Length: 277
Ligand SMILES: [Zn+2]
Ligand SMILES: [Zn+2]
Image 1 (cartoon, protein in one colour):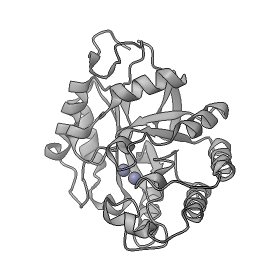
Image 2 (spheres, helix red, strand yellow; image 1 turned 120 degrees about the vertical axis):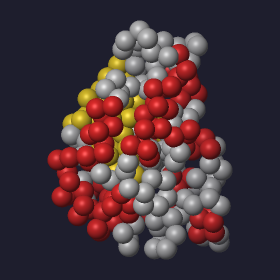
Image 3 (cartoon, rainbow, N blue to C red; image 1 turned 90 degrees about the vertical axis):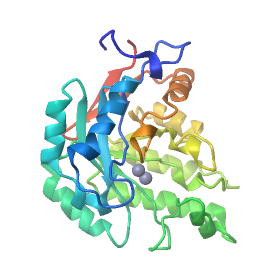
């Protein structure tokens, strides 16, 4: 890394420097056509934070807003920043079939596809909407819901078309904890991730949700390290001011747990890059 990197994201006690954010939503939660006006504030925030590599990953249901020419224009205007064209592929029973078709059609223009499970039994509400989604957990067997969630994650992985899995244990978002040991199906999921050569993200979004915990939890991260699964770093920002949120805290966590590299993607090819300056 070049030495002019800003210190904002570097924890004072570690020599690690996080330079990439691979999960963000310029469109927020509606279709907003990509324009320089919409995208430039994201590049500005990235520059301010010292981020060198970012991926736009709007939800597949808003694919109509994505414009690759505008991304190219933004690249020309911000040549110090790597800007990856990406998308977050949901398991949305209503919209994601069309999203998948769009991804297949635009595969060669995309650098990065995140896979996410946001839907359980209800097709009309993401279980991770806060606070309403918590209603889906009322009077339910939480162990079964965890098993169901991870089964859906494996289905999504097996269906192909993704480069990394987002917020791997999102099911904990509202703070519901399993009583049974979830190790077996987490392990099965990680095995599949490893077999498919996918990455998983370390997402600071969990720290701003009711669970107040990094996605995924430490035991999952430790198992992933043993299986040599690469990690991306992610804020899941829905506004450019959320970009790189809590990355200093994430740096601390990564140093503590022994992660020294992050994975970046260009045209779906992942490369692990050392975090040392
Ligand atoms: Zn998501
Ligand atoms: Zn997201």
